Image (cartoon, rainbow, N blue to C red):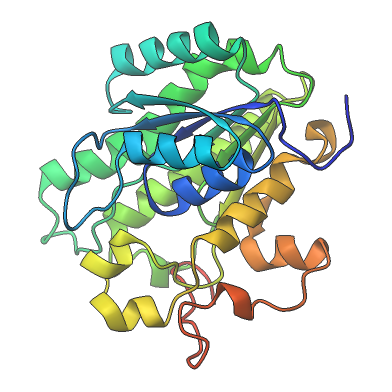
Length: 277
């Protein structure tokens, strides 16, 4: 296995890669010359949700990667398994699975319709499990296989559960999958890790659900997550598993000391994200 810090020639299956953090991870990989499977739902432009699987694919290829845009609802088993099959048919392998697709609703027990509860758990937890199940036979053939969950460090602090227990359960369950997979696949060498941002990240969710332009100003750009994911995914899988990484800690370990380039607005301090602090 090469120890070079590159994803060149590697195939990444990234859910929700048409925008935001998933897109940033895809673009960082593309600059190495990676193959990127964009498994996401958006096929038509939307004023509030910029980016489609096709615009992302064009950007990935312009950046030096190879792209396969696939319309996938990660709750649909047939769609996921078909997408994995198409990915392997085109690129010959899957080396990395990034479970980035996620639904959010910061609502109370009474204020969370069961349809919304099912959406969050269907995408965040079931979708992650299904994608892993569909990809695992191919990950086992890779010489440096990684699974990366976009989920927080495991916590039982009640302050994260009381205000929005349904959402918190879905994200913590994603992290529990990391705990389980790291142990289940330790002998086979599949790395399973989680990555979470120190601060708010300027995504459509922050813009549309968490406070609009002011919250975007108090955020870091998605590129910090792309760079942190790259650092994790280029590490030897057998020596890097079962971790709950924070983006700026990952980059600090890589020698990054100045995070100002990731600020949406360098004149304001970014706000700490949920599940930290």
